[in-house]
Figure 1: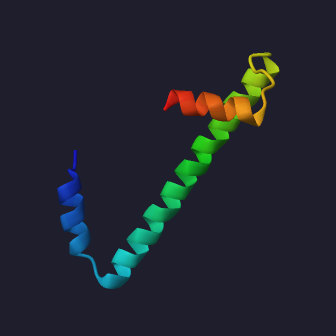
Figure 2: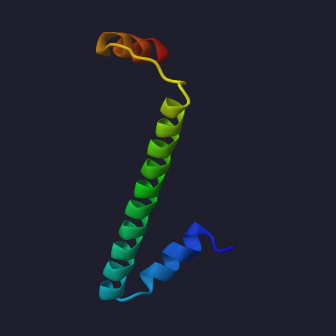
Length: 70
């Protein structure tokens, strides 16, 4: 397996244009991964709601719960 240091060193060997292309590629991949994670979270939340595992709460109750958790 290639280490991060090896990847960074290899990126240093690229031309500035290639480095920009690599950066653009990585940013797109990160954005896609974030979208996929969000889609999974939404699907899980919908399934939880459909199963009746959620409950109605007020904003104040939610904020109190978040405050207590920290």
